Length: 228
Image: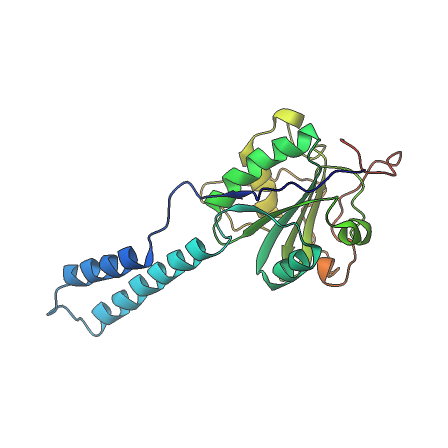
Protein backbone atom coordinates (compact mmCIF):
# COMPACT_ATOMS: atom_id res chain seq x y z
CA UNK A 1 0.00 0.00 0.00
CA UNK A 2 1.64 3.24 -1.11
CA UNK A 3 -1.10 5.85 -1.09
CA UNK A 4 0.24 9.39 -0.71
CA UNK A 5 -1.45 11.96 1.56
CA UNK A 6 -3.54 14.49 -0.27
CA UNK A 7 -2.55 18.14 -0.14
CA UNK A 8 -6.06 19.39 0.59
CA UNK A 9 -8.06 19.05 3.78
CA UNK A 10 -11.52 17.51 3.90
CA UNK A 11 -13.82 19.67 6.01
CA UNK A 12 -17.49 19.52 5.12
CA UNK A 13 -19.67 22.20 6.64
CA UNK A 14 -23.02 21.35 8.20
CA UNK A 15 -26.10 21.88 6.11
CA UNK A 16 -26.97 24.98 8.14
CA UNK A 17 -24.28 27.54 9.00
CA UNK A 18 -24.00 28.38 12.66
CA UNK A 19 -24.34 32.07 13.63
CA UNK A 20 -21.16 34.15 14.02
CA UNK A 21 -20.44 35.76 17.38
CA UNK A 22 -21.95 39.11 16.38
CA UNK A 23 -25.06 37.39 15.11
CA UNK A 24 -25.25 35.36 18.32
CA UNK A 25 -25.16 38.53 20.44
CA UNK A 26 -27.87 40.09 18.32
CA UNK A 27 -29.95 36.94 18.63
CA UNK A 28 -29.67 36.99 22.40
CA UNK A 29 -30.69 40.64 22.55
CA UNK A 30 -33.69 39.96 20.35
CA UNK A 31 -34.74 36.99 22.42
CA UNK A 32 -34.34 38.96 25.63
CA UNK A 33 -36.47 41.78 24.29
CA UNK A 34 -39.13 39.23 23.44
CA UNK A 35 -39.42 38.28 27.09
CA UNK A 36 -41.59 40.72 29.01
CA UNK A 37 -39.51 42.45 31.68
CA UNK A 38 -42.49 42.24 34.01
CA UNK A 39 -42.83 38.48 33.44
CA UNK A 40 -41.07 36.56 36.16
CA UNK A 41 -43.17 33.75 37.64
CA UNK A 42 -40.64 32.81 40.26
CA UNK A 43 -37.51 33.18 38.16
CA UNK A 44 -38.86 31.60 34.96
CA UNK A 45 -37.53 34.46 32.85
CA UNK A 46 -34.02 34.14 34.24
CA UNK A 47 -34.09 30.37 33.75
CA UNK A 48 -35.22 30.79 30.16
CA UNK A 49 -32.45 33.30 29.48
CA UNK A 50 -29.86 30.87 30.82
CA UNK A 51 -31.23 28.18 28.53
CA UNK A 52 -31.06 30.49 25.52
CA UNK A 53 -27.50 31.51 26.38
CA UNK A 54 -26.48 27.86 26.65
CA UNK A 55 -28.02 27.12 23.25
CA UNK A 56 -26.16 30.00 21.61
CA UNK A 57 -22.91 28.99 23.31
CA UNK A 58 -23.32 25.41 22.08
CA UNK A 59 -23.97 26.63 18.54
CA UNK A 60 -20.87 28.81 18.70
CA UNK A 61 -18.77 25.88 19.95
CA UNK A 62 -19.97 23.68 17.10
CA UNK A 63 -19.10 26.41 14.61
CA UNK A 64 -15.58 26.77 16.00
CA UNK A 65 -14.81 23.04 16.15
CA UNK A 66 -15.08 19.96 13.99
CA UNK A 67 -18.47 19.00 15.39
CA UNK A 68 -21.13 18.98 12.70
CA UNK A 69 -18.50 18.26 10.06
CA UNK A 70 -16.87 15.15 8.64
CA UNK A 71 -13.17 15.81 9.13
CA UNK A 72 -10.01 14.13 7.91
CA UNK A 73 -7.02 14.08 10.28
CA UNK A 74 -3.67 13.30 8.68
CA UNK A 75 -1.31 13.42 11.68
CA UNK A 76 -1.49 10.23 13.74
CA UNK A 77 -0.62 11.94 17.02
CA UNK A 78 -3.38 14.50 16.50
CA UNK A 79 -5.86 11.75 15.70
CA UNK A 80 -5.07 9.88 18.92
CA UNK A 81 -5.37 13.04 21.02
CA UNK A 82 -8.57 14.24 19.35
CA UNK A 83 -10.27 10.89 19.71
CA UNK A 84 -9.22 10.46 23.33
CA UNK A 85 -10.70 13.84 24.26
CA UNK A 86 -14.03 13.32 22.51
CA UNK A 87 -17.11 12.22 24.44
CA UNK A 88 -18.44 10.42 21.35
CA UNK A 89 -16.44 9.73 18.25
CA UNK A 90 -16.80 7.84 14.96
CA UNK A 91 -13.59 7.06 13.07
CA UNK A 92 -13.50 5.82 9.49
CA UNK A 93 -10.29 4.18 8.27
CA UNK A 94 -10.19 4.53 4.50
CA UNK A 95 -8.08 4.26 1.34
CA UNK A 96 -8.45 6.93 -1.32
CA UNK A 97 -8.60 4.40 -4.14
CA UNK A 98 -11.34 2.23 -2.65
CA UNK A 99 -14.83 2.72 -4.02
CA UNK A 100 -16.62 1.48 -0.92
CA UNK A 101 -14.71 3.93 1.26
CA UNK A 102 -16.14 6.72 -0.87
CA UNK A 103 -19.62 5.26 -0.41
CA UNK A 104 -19.10 5.30 3.35
CA UNK A 105 -17.89 8.91 3.14
CA UNK A 106 -21.16 10.04 1.60
CA UNK A 107 -23.19 8.53 4.43
CA UNK A 108 -20.95 9.85 7.20
CA UNK A 109 -21.11 13.37 5.80
CA UNK A 110 -24.88 13.31 6.25
CA UNK A 111 -24.70 11.87 9.76
CA UNK A 112 -22.05 14.36 10.87
CA UNK A 113 -24.31 17.27 9.90
CA UNK A 114 -27.23 15.69 11.76
CA UNK A 115 -25.53 14.42 14.95
CA UNK A 116 -23.61 17.54 15.97
CA UNK A 117 -22.80 16.16 19.42
CA UNK A 118 -20.63 13.40 17.91
CA UNK A 119 -17.19 13.84 16.37
CA UNK A 120 -16.98 12.26 12.90
CA UNK A 121 -13.41 11.65 11.73
CA UNK A 122 -11.66 9.88 8.88
CA UNK A 123 -8.06 8.74 8.50
CA UNK A 124 -6.21 7.50 5.44
CA UNK A 125 -4.58 4.20 6.43
CA UNK A 126 -1.38 5.39 4.75
CA UNK A 127 -1.07 8.14 7.37
CA UNK A 128 -1.77 6.12 10.52
CA UNK A 129 0.22 2.86 10.35
CA UNK A 130 0.49 2.50 14.13
CA UNK A 131 -3.28 2.63 14.65
CA UNK A 132 -3.91 0.37 11.67
CA UNK A 133 -1.72 -2.27 13.30
CA UNK A 134 -2.93 -1.83 16.88
CA UNK A 135 -6.62 -1.73 15.96
CA UNK A 136 -6.21 -4.64 13.55
CA UNK A 137 -7.64 -2.78 10.57
CA UNK A 138 -7.34 -5.30 7.74
CA UNK A 139 -10.37 -4.78 5.51
CA UNK A 140 -11.76 -1.45 4.32
CA UNK A 141 -13.91 0.42 4.88
CA UNK A 142 -13.53 0.04 8.64
CA UNK A 143 -15.67 2.13 10.97
CA UNK A 144 -15.00 2.26 14.72
CA UNK A 145 -17.18 4.05 17.27
CA UNK A 146 -15.99 5.21 20.70
CA UNK A 147 -17.74 6.59 23.77
CA UNK A 148 -15.36 7.99 26.39
CA UNK A 149 -12.57 6.01 24.74
CA UNK A 150 -14.45 2.72 25.02
CA UNK A 151 -14.99 0.83 21.77
CA UNK A 152 -18.73 0.48 21.19
CA UNK A 153 -18.70 -0.85 17.63
CA UNK A 154 -16.45 -1.94 14.81
CA UNK A 155 -18.03 -2.23 11.40
CA UNK A 156 -15.94 -3.93 8.71
CA UNK A 157 -17.09 -3.67 5.13
CA UNK A 158 -20.82 -3.66 4.39
CA UNK A 159 -21.72 -7.21 5.45
CA UNK A 160 -23.73 -6.01 8.46
CA UNK A 161 -25.70 -3.45 6.45
CA UNK A 162 -28.93 -4.36 4.64
CA UNK A 163 -28.60 -3.69 0.95
CA UNK A 164 -24.83 -3.99 0.69
CA UNK A 165 -23.35 -1.21 -1.42
CA UNK A 166 -26.76 0.43 -1.74
CA UNK A 167 -27.54 0.58 1.99
CA UNK A 168 -29.43 3.62 3.26
CA UNK A 169 -27.96 6.18 5.63
CA UNK A 170 -30.80 5.45 8.04
CA UNK A 171 -29.72 1.82 8.31
CA UNK A 172 -26.22 2.85 9.35
CA UNK A 173 -27.64 5.44 11.73
CA UNK A 174 -30.01 2.99 13.45
CA UNK A 175 -27.22 0.48 13.95
CA UNK A 176 -24.93 3.11 15.46
CA UNK A 177 -27.72 4.25 17.78
CA UNK A 178 -28.26 0.67 18.96
CA UNK A 179 -24.53 0.32 19.62
CA UNK A 180 -24.65 3.46 21.75
CA UNK A 181 -22.36 5.54 19.54
CA UNK A 182 -25.12 7.94 18.43
CA UNK A 183 -27.94 9.27 20.53
CA UNK A 184 -31.35 7.84 19.72
CA UNK A 185 -33.20 9.48 16.88
CA UNK A 186 -36.87 10.24 17.68
CA UNK A 187 -39.16 7.93 15.75
CA UNK A 188 -36.34 5.64 14.59
CA UNK A 189 -37.03 1.95 13.99
CA UNK A 190 -36.21 -0.14 17.05
CA UNK A 191 -34.72 -2.90 14.90
CA UNK A 192 -30.95 -2.48 14.76
CA UNK A 193 -28.94 -2.70 11.57
CA UNK A 194 -25.98 -4.47 13.19
CA UNK A 195 -27.33 -7.71 14.68
CA UNK A 196 -23.91 -9.04 15.59
CA UNK A 197 -22.74 -5.77 17.14
CA UNK A 198 -25.72 -4.93 19.33
CA UNK A 199 -26.29 -6.16 22.84
CA UNK A 200 -22.93 -5.69 24.50
CA UNK A 201 -20.34 -3.07 25.30
CA UNK A 202 -16.70 -3.79 24.66
CA UNK A 203 -14.50 -2.83 27.56
CA UNK A 204 -11.38 -2.62 25.44
CA UNK A 205 -10.00 0.90 25.65
CA UNK A 206 -9.68 1.31 21.90
CA UNK A 207 -7.25 3.96 20.71
CA UNK A 208 -6.20 4.87 24.23
CA UNK A 209 -4.23 1.68 24.72
CA UNK A 210 -4.03 0.49 21.14
CA UNK A 211 -6.27 -2.56 21.45
CA UNK A 212 -8.95 -3.54 19.00
CA UNK A 213 -12.44 -3.51 20.43
CA UNK A 214 -15.92 -4.38 19.27
CA UNK A 215 -16.89 -7.53 17.40
CA UNK A 216 -16.10 -6.44 13.87
CA UNK A 217 -13.99 -8.85 11.86
CA UNK A 218 -11.98 -9.13 8.69
CA UNK A 219 -12.42 -12.08 6.39
CA UNK A 220 -10.10 -14.97 7.22
CA UNK A 221 -8.46 -14.83 3.79
CA UNK A 222 -7.66 -11.11 4.11
CA UNK A 223 -4.27 -10.46 5.63
CA UNK A 224 -3.66 -7.09 3.94
CA UNK A 225 -5.78 -4.01 3.50
CA UNK A 226 -8.12 -4.55 0.61
CA UNK A 227 -11.30 -3.17 -0.91
CA UNK A 228 -13.82 -5.50 0.71
